Image (tube, rainbow, N blue to C red; front, side, top):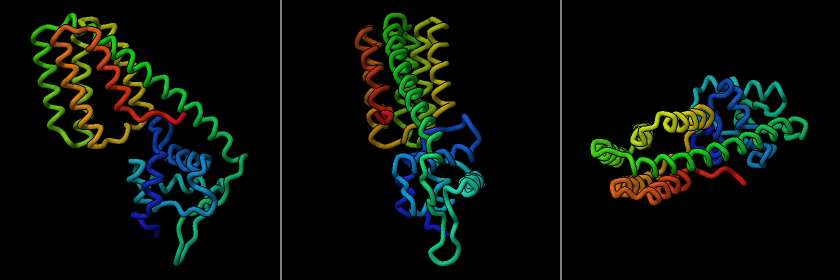
Length: 241
């Protein structure tokens, strides 16, 4: 059995960007193929164990097992039993990896465009909210910013973050602007895994939220928009160049 604490598991975790647009086993197989394609997993590399892969990619062990079986049938990996056994990268032939390389390129282009659109749209939302918000809406923004600052668990913090930014959209008093923001956020959340949650990013977001609220409170449209756009660009992992 592979060691779940193998350092390779940490390196592999960086490949887990795509989610739920295809079946889980196919996603996992694509992650491994992408690692081989970019040279992060050269021929002969022993992959992390099923448990470590499942944790790194946030999927079930049964999905990992099915993905490895697919790759084994393709001749990309091989499983060795006994002492020193495990799952090893067997082939990095261009013919095998070409389709994956195309998908990686398309994925990063789409991700870059969506993240850019989100930053620009939320700039507009914050700018408009600074001019149209009510005292009640400002009070709600303060409460949501404070709520976020008290959460250190990733899932809860992300939910609170979404609530904060949706409250800004509602303060615009324009359902169409809110719809545009929701459409973009939905595409991002449906197509991509969340960016890594870290204490550093969390503290940055806490500071950003407070600054955005104060700019909206002051009715400073330009500053509110600038701060919100900068917030999204600085707290999102940039796609590879």
